[in-house]
Image (cartoon, rainbow, N blue to C red):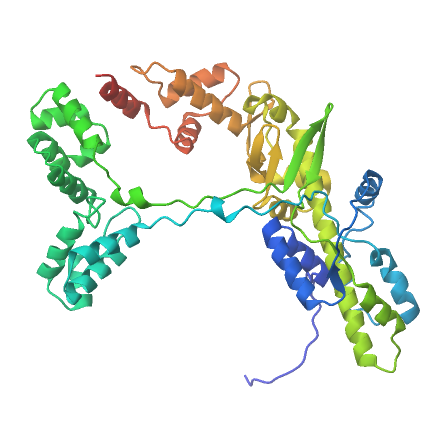
Length: 485
């Protein structure tokens, strides 16, 4: 069969997103800090946009009109991609007239004085800085310093060495004995045990350094760490041939040791949450405010707007350029406005749905899914997913991420929907109030919940218990025995 080329026409359906819709989708998941960067980039690239200074805030009447006209200002359909021919000159100004004098005004803004320099503290030394400082005081040969720095560079934040002595010796072209000698010195640096290859080695190093010579404690660390992790104290006592009280005293000694020596110098990064939505109670109603603090006020540049209106066809290239930039500025302002409207709709529905939770607490939280909210406000589920991503809401009950309010529902005995968060809270309270000598098993917790109209299976109880980081009943019982005896 001979091969030949030919041209065929084929009709297919494709989803083509308009440029304006693509831009709006990209703006939805952005936080305020990320949005500021996007706005700054747009300001630097589009001369038709400018940052307004000393603009007046919108009156409540104007805000209501903006919210009521949300559907009128919705994004253009996919068919309107901005590429359908050139607009007539006399229609161009009329097309953009609605947005010429409108500005993107934040609803919440406050000028804050910058903090004095005296309020800032210097950065604390990291684990690696601290170890290198001690290495410079301990090793005087250039080769020893290089090996020590290489070893320190392969130590994790918990204080453990992730490379073997053989790999380090091969990389530094030295003997394994040299690496072991230097590592033994590093293990006695502050914090003691840093640079160990395993938990057992770190604990034994600390016992040697602090001169803990108890043979039973050393044997537990050397041979029976797995039993200690599982709280198998009775088996441990039989293996060692000692009484349970003797095991408890040795466990108290081992508890004084540090299983993660590097964490002493670990400085966790503090993540400051800036709420994107503010919920305040006015009289008996809740007011929803979009926190646009720090966002610049945008408007169309009057100078370039006048140049465009005066432009003639004598310079068609400049006219087309300015016309294109004006269109992009229009779509950007429109996308920002649409982003705010969508976030407001999502926040408003969440507050209305979870009003009892805000007023009374976790016992009154209601189940909610992305699909339910999307159907209520008339958008796609993916749009709601983008809105709730990385955004926080400040309520009278506290600050919560938006995705906190979305969770599955469970059916009660009388057909009502029960939030999974509510079930978890009940499990947590049952464990806190249980008899420590006879802790509740997953089956017993399930029976108690079923009596209170929470009909869930044992495996569901086990899953929620693990998510709450609550150990099984036999582990809780052993730990209680050690703490009490």
